[in-house]
Structures are given as C-alpha cells and as structure tokens.
Amino acid sequence: MRFAIRHTTHYTYELPANGAVQRLRLTPPKTKSQIIHSWAIETDGIDKAAHYVDGFGNLVHLVTHAGPYETLTISAGGEVETTDTGGVIGDIGEVANPQVFLRNTPLTGASDAIAAMAAALPSGKLLSRLHHLLEAIATQVHYVTDSTDAATSAAEAFEAGRGVCQDHAHIFIAAARGMGLPSRYVTGYLHVAEEREEVAHHAWAETHVPGLGWVGFDPANNVCPTERYVRLACGFDANSAAPIVGMGRGGGRESLRVAVVVQEQEQQQQ
Image (spheres, rainbow, N blue to C red):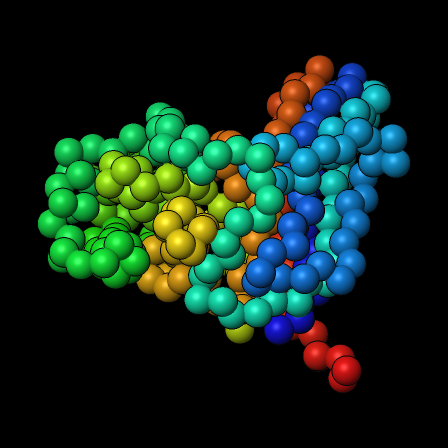
C-alpha cells in the first residue's frame, strides 16, 4: 500500500518565547516492510539543523529556534509504500545490541500481576508464546480513550484494566522483558478507514526473536503490524521514542495541538 502522511505539531505560547532546542525523530526509516518515496520536515531552522542516526536506528534532526516567537509549527510528511511482512522487520542496521532493550524504565517495570500473566501463558515455541501474550493483553486491558496519561506506567494501566495504545505497548514490553526478551517501544502511523487523527498516530511494541530479528506486536488491536502500519521511531518507552523532545526559554504557558493524517494513495503502475 502507498500512503501520503502529514504530521503537524503546533505550539502556542502565552508570552513570547526566547528560543528552543529540539530533537526531531520525524523521519521513518527504510525497513523490510516500508519504502520511503519522499519525506521532508518543515520548520524554522530545519535548513541548518544537524542530523544523525542514533544507536537505535532513528534519524534525528537537532533544530534550534531563535526567539522571540509566540507560535511554532513543525510539519513532517511524504509518501511511504508498505508491505505486509507479518510484523517481521528483522534488523535495520542499528548500532545498539538488542540486549540493551532488556533495560526497564519507570514506565515499563513489570508488576507481580504482569509477571503472573506472562508465567501463565501456554507453553510452546517462543513466537507462539508471544502471540498468546499479545492476545492476553488485548483481552485483559480494554482500549479506552483518555483513560490514562503520559505518566501512567505499565503496572498502573494493567491494574486498571484499561488504557490506550501507549499503555498496551508498555505492558507488552514489561512482560516480554520479564521473560528475558529484548523489547522496545515503537511510534508510528496507522491507516484506518475512518481516518480518525487520534488513531492515525499510533504505538506498538517490538521484540527481538532469535532467527527473525525484531518482530512487531500491537496489543491495542491484537495484531502484528500489517501493511497499514508505518514505522517512525523506537526507544525504551514512550518518552525515549517521542517524535519531538526539547527544551526552551520563556513563553509562559504552552498549548500543544497535534494533527496526523494518513491517506491511502493509488499504486503507480510499474
């Protein structure tokens, strides 16, 4: 499938801001499941931005904004062609050893209840057990919009039995790491027929499986990523993989508006 994607982040400040430095993880990588036909980031200072590929394989732009300004807009987008690989992307040439993704964070620590769920999974081959884990989380944790926030941990969401895609991914990561399997958080885009923006910006998990490399699992939808998924960036958790991270001076109270649109395009004839 081929998609046109537009991801816009707009900041409004109560008072004039004096400047900011931001790390942008807003460029999708080429993998077994996706080809990038075109992509660009538009914001003040992008033409002078330093850029590098971090240890996790994310392309990062380091942008500096000079003040004063009362609004700031960052827009990224282009066309991406995807293929259904059953969630398997293998390795994307990242420098970091997969074992670093055994490291837990405050958002991905496994509670006794999460560990018990993982221990109760049916025995069998590793990939089969991971699919059972996918189903268990999808069954036990209901998707409820606005039921959690950015600070909600995997343990808290699992105990509550509800959450959003961020929470489902964190719970899967917590359980898989507890099983001794390197697992990481992935942020990206999901095309749905209704084109609801809150769904288009999505998150799921990846686990490193011997012989296959990285394999994606989306407990929020109880599937492995298909051709409707576009992978953007990865990290230890939602904070580590966030598309935009930065710090600024002045501005007073900040308001944020994010809009993501993913539209299917007609496939071009070869």
